Image 1 (tube, rainbow, N blue to C red):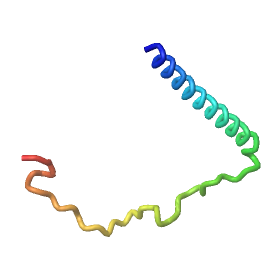
Image 2: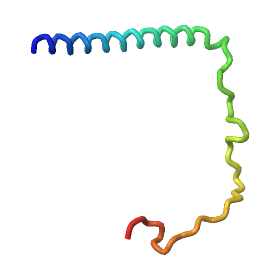
Image 3: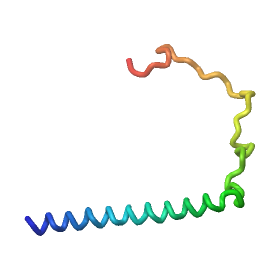
Length: 74
């Protein structure tokens, strides 16, 4: 029983150390980016591409309403 408890504690410690390392590396990367932010152009365009934009004109037929008023069930 003590061996199982020790194994679980080692596993928990390993996961915690992994997440702490990952967080530290991410924080370091963010700090480096913020240092160079004025010199780096944004990676995404300021507005989405045209094919993703919805037009105000809707050419779709109206949705048919059911006798139940759109509710499911009986």
